[in-house]
Image (cartoon, rainbow, N blue to C red; front, side):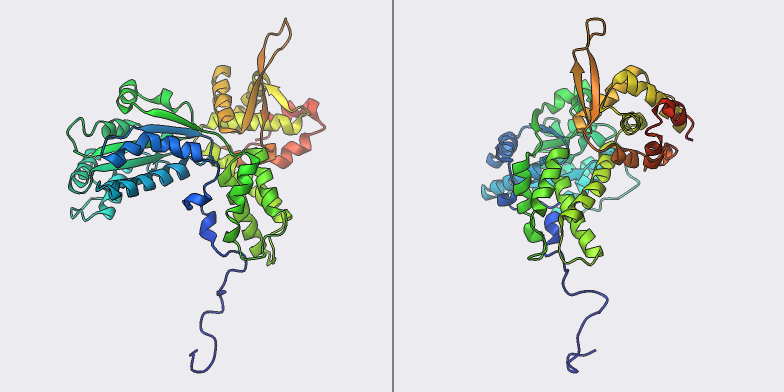
Amino acid sequence: MSDEEGEEVGDPLFADQDPIFARKELLHVGHVPEENRIVGRDEEIQSVADEIGAIVRGDPPNNVMIYGKTGTGKSLVSRHVASRAQNAAEANGIACGVVYVDCSEADTETRATRQLAMELKRATEYDREIPTRGVGTMEYYRHVWRILDDHYDALVVILDEIDKLTNSNILMQLSRAREANKTESYIGVVGISNKIQYRESLDERIDSSFGHRELFFHPYDADQLREIMRNREDAFQRGVLASGTIQLCAALAAKKHGDARKAIDILKEAGELARRNDDATVTKEHIRQAQDIAEINRVEELTSGGTIHAKLALYALSSLVIVGDEGTYSTRQIYERYEQMCDVAGFEPVTENGLYKQLKEQAFLGVIESNKTGGGRSQGSYLLHRLVTDPRHIVKAVRRDASLDDLPTVEDLSSMEGNRNGSQSTLGTSR
């Protein structure tokens, strides 16, 4: 239909304006906001800047490892500081590059170096073809060294979720590149992990070569989360957010995990729910529904990189909580239930000490809490474990793994509640 006929232009299938969102990119996980939108991370920003800041003056930067739970601003701060360092270096006449590599996707040395080479090629006028397949890892390194020597004085490489790499040789290659005369450029590496034990997995030779500093990011508190949420209000159309929704969203996130990323996810999902329901406003009820969805997704994300036995350990504790009437359980109690679950799912159980290590990792991730009890003189002290999140969310998240979908559902477990004396045998034959 033409304008001349005075009729509307456009496809009526699509609305000209989103009724809920105005700037949805503000709620995107990879979005790096302006400095005034970064909340409660001034000290962390300064700490990262202290480690890589020498690059601005044409000096070699330090390598740094940043640890912290999901949603504590590790990636956000790293990308923010690296971008500012790049701008400051260029203002001083120093050609500085920044490359971000998500190791959950580029999870081998070859994939990570290929992405590194491709990103550098895109940012420069490098005219050589870089094959996407059919060549070895060292060929990608050679492209990286050539691009650096042709175009850069310095480079900051951010390796996010570095613990997902199948091996850590890239750390030695990058940290020793100048010393080994591979390139004249200085290279600073920022590694990011939510696994505090990552350093223990490093080969001693690589650990020594990397020579990094370690920084730890703590979860956001309720006040910080409220401010983070308020800084996302303009992601929505004016008047769409009902009174109290921001406060509820922040309070739920603070109570559960202090995870800003998930708080933002809850807010976005609440908006999506309102839009799907043709609701004009985002209400507290939308926030509560979105929180349930986000929590299941969060648990699945936290456990996705873990072993089957980590998932079975979490499931075992969750089933005890649902079927039983206690909030905390000892490692021995969880192990007995875990052995039953291994039998149901068809896996050989690890030792009780192996299960303890799995629980320790989940405690660091914030899925459970583990506290030592005084016990009695005859008992001695032992650990008691409790869930930080709803056991139903954990059961649903764990059963999303195709190899564990034989485990009892939330409904199965709930039906066993009240029949606790017989629950052990029932769980053992739920396949």
